[in-house]
Length: 480
Image 1 (tube, rainbow, N blue to C red):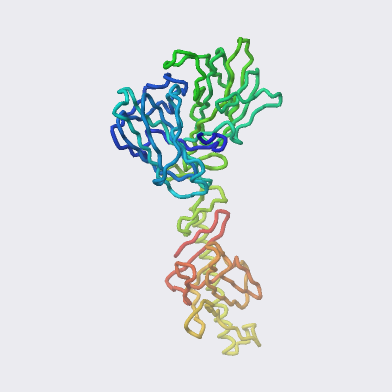
Image 2 (image 1 turned 90 degrees about the horizontal axis):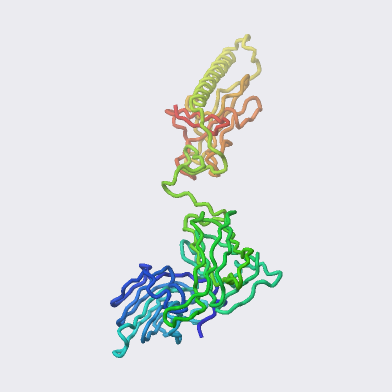
């Protein structure tokens, strides 16, 4: 007996036209529905089958814990199936079914396996087989691994899957055979939650009921569809319970989570056809759109993103902030103006100190600094260095942060620290002291750091004056 659908409620469906299936022999494609009405098996999947009237074989690689082969057949024939060269169980067919046969399945032989497997199917005919005999591959169905992202695949979801729920407080839904749940009660519904771009419902057309209507609702839009009346099959000319009957397919949906509700409508039809739920076929989301909200992830060439890029950060994004149109002229003007103000202040301090020092050395009583010895501005680098002595720098080599605090006076001592490796935006590496005042937003002197984190040099390049201004628009750096 074939493995019950309730044991394998979710299967990836690989159509016979899939290019990864390898055929060997005189196979041909039919897409006309050649056998759809011949027996009670119902229409073939995707309206295509690939078959042969002579001996042939096919092969397919998959990664899963279960596999089965769906075929259509006429006349007299035989076949066998192997997985990784091990024979798996084949099943006897009812010749009145014709389509949607389960030819073979792997049962529990692949349980727990995460390897890639090879399925081989061999079709045979005997010399006495009627010329009308044929074997057709309809689909290969396998149970995916839990780790499979299921991107852009066709997925068969049985009516027993947890994603399918029934409004059955009144007991309106019941098992009706052929692996299906059904109801003939008015205004009875069920819900199917899925993530994908389309969904199709497959049913059973029972042989004793009259046509009626039902409806489905998805994304707030309701659509009516027909429940077919009883029908005959060609190979017997009699009424039959036709399986795998397609009821509807939703139009193209956004690649996201959806809730599909299917319900019977109020009607006065005598012996109305049952609304029967056999299984759903869904198209899952593409790889670049699987997200909780179902929105597509940005891809190359898909337009601008909402992130902004920090200058000097090698193109890394600052995704926590919204983009603004930065007034570049205003910032550059502010930086240049601030830099000139700092330079002028430094020159003034230097001249005052030089004059006072000269007065002290000459004993000038008018200097107003009697009893004090003022040294010139002394600058030392605290960056690692092979030399034991500190590097003495001139004010002309300063790297400057924000403008010097207005009105600063007194002795000034400037230290240079290397940039912190923690962040490209760290502005705490330079310190300026004026009359015991310390401010990281005032004049800062940094050692000349290498272009990469973890490198530094103990001297400042005297040919570059680096101005850095903080504003509401972020940091703007410049070499002058």
